[in-house]
Image (cartoon, rainbow over all chains, first blue to last red; front, top):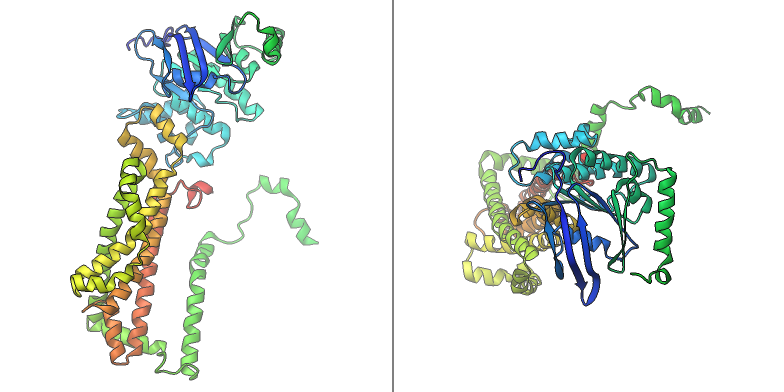
Length: 250
Length: 282
């Protein structure tokens, strides 16, 4: 709990033989995964491959059917950013951010405003969520997720519903706050280029199993048009689209 | 020609502030006045009709006569007493039936067990027209306050129960999941997510309930009472005082409108975030 230094704020996650089935159908078939403290991991895969299920289990929203998850050095108190902003329509933007502080946050108001400032929405503290644009709402959701300084942030395709330009802005913002706070981040996305742009490491899940695990060592901030990224993206996409025949080793 | 010129130069009009078409104060006054235009016209037509003899006096009194009897009854404090009695009955019926309905609606919305236990019974009771109970209620309570209280509470109960129940059930499941994942306990979740989410629906129930409240009260006061607006009207009928009868009807209309306005005010206060009620939409 007292490890508040900016260097190693994140929590390490160790997953062993994680299984999950829904009504007899096996969605995750024994996942082994190590996430280092402060690492930015991206999980990619086709829809229905089990990547969101994995994230929901990591974030504590669902219980696994088997296997174990250990959070190194204390609690794995996770904050989850959903695909939708999920703001309370009847609470002001500031109060929505304060939801992230839980009960009895003494300086809730100040902390919520500081978090809003960090996502560039300090002037919207009094506004109703209904008056914001889609990108602004998702930024409020980010502020809510980060206001309690979590050690683990789970992102479930949070940028999927945004338009292209807003999305680029949000990607920059996410990278910026991650670099400033050094929490452990797990991002689930179906956008390979987004994964390559943001993550230290990309893991691919196919039919409930991890079939690819690549470290991305390119320096940050990464340029979207960098040729190395393009080459990697091609390889991964080929793998994703190629499906069955190439999977002899799996 | 000049019409076109007014519409086209968009770019220019963004630079300078657009000239106000009407001062906001005037348009607000118009907005306040317009809803009362129709009632006022009806009143004028009524007066003219009575004066010209189209409407016979013994069938329907003149507005002036109604006003005169209102003044007479006000001066004798009889009117104030009757209104107070009716108002007290309405409020206590609403408080009793409404709070029971609210509590049951909430608990059945939140708990499946509570729903299984009570919902079927309540749905059966709901299909009994409350006024059909009048003979039984008179046998039970006589013409006491108990009879009126029972009937209004019974009538008010169902719209509030059903709408509270549905409001709670239809709260966005994604928001509830968000609240859980952000560590809200049961009570916090209820206070911050479920109750505000159900509130628009609860208000719909309240407004329906108010309508039934007045209806039930009018009928039960005309059948069995020794005071109240309905009693006043029945007494006046015996003495052929049509002006007092009409006055009673008008008072009921005014009381109903007042209750509805009060709920609207409450809605605007508490549902400011809701697109249908206020600031958020603008």
